[in-house]
Amino acid sequence: MIRFALTRLALLLVGLLVASALIFVTLRVLPGDVAQVIAGTDGTPEQVQAIRESLGLNQPLLAQYGDWLGGILSGDLGRSMLTGASVTSELVEKSQVTIPLAVLSLATALVIAIPLGILSALKHRSITGSAMSMASQAIAAVPVVWAGMLLVVVFAVGLGWFPPQGFPRDGWEAPGRALYSLVLPALTIGVVEGAVLLRFIRSAALEALGQDYVRTAAAKGLTRTRALVTHGMPNVALTVVSVLALQIAGLLVGAVIIEQLFNLPGIGRMLVTDVGNRDLEKVQGDVLVLTGLVLIIGTVVDIVARAIDPRQREVSA
Image (cartoon, helix red, strand yellow):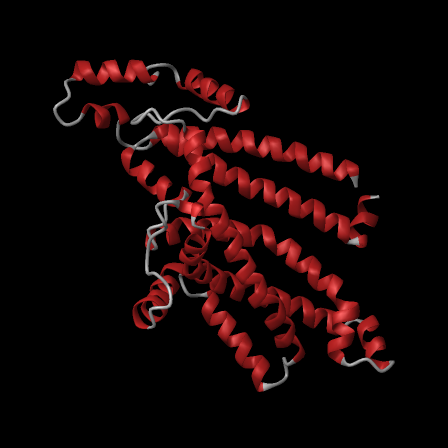
């Protein structure tokens, strides 16, 4: 188990290094010139060249990448080419919106998927089970932006239960208002991702119901529900843990879209703005942090899955 964990951590470091190189190279081949953006439409070629030199854009790409990577290793993601603000500081500030949004969305997805997924498996031969399965498949196919607009029309515009957009200016200094503004965005992502997760849980629960140990427990007097919950939940839990890495990646992608739709000042909205401004340093930092979160969570999920699954531990031994 320790050897597996160390191997996964080593692969994580390699993955982060490869991701940083791909991000750097990809951004450098995009059209546009940040120096021209800073100089403005009236900037002379000499002014543009001077800006490029001041930003280090005239250096070889390998030297630029080395400087950026060295800063990352020391905890410095660089500074905005347009404003000079610290990328790390801005990411910390924006994460106070994005991380709570992701956590609330994940909690919503789990609250929806786990009980309904198990119920759908228990009722899979009934009209209720079939209806739940079809509904989850239909909801999972809905683009998150469409789901967001529908919920805004119903719960914000129609019923007036939630604000349609925005986040309090004083942020979490007013925790009640801040949390209230994230409910509808979190519900938007959570419902769609929960429908996806529900289908995985349903399949895992159906597989568990067909196992001999669950049938034996039922034959000894336990109800199918009690037998599944008591003896089959470890397999269902393993499925939940294994799928979480994919779910969290979906949550982060969904957050980028939802922050635009609900006008939330998070990392996703900042990323879209920075791409439009060709602010390479900030875009690099934004994308690297999001990519790093996905890779780190995937690594943690793999290690946890190996730890709780005796079959995988036996294989590794």
